[in-house]
Image 1: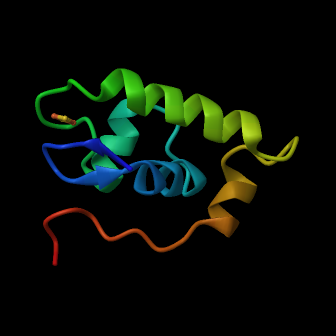
Image 2 (image 1 turned 180 degrees about the vertical axis):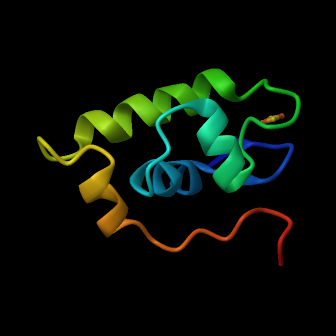
Length: 78
Ligand code: FES
């Protein structure tokens, strides 16, 4: 599902950014673009960050999640 219409970022892209180590909306914006433009989606992005981190296995914050991350292609870099 699209969460950021400005850059066409999906919830999966945001989750992948979190899995790759992003833990703030700024870090997600830097990785996939979501929330980096008009900002209307930032509340949704923060919700996805919280849900993704909450769903991660105990003790897997950031370091271990990076290991599981899919390669993310920043929006507009193709
Ligand atoms: S809708 Fe996400 S930055 Fe505008």
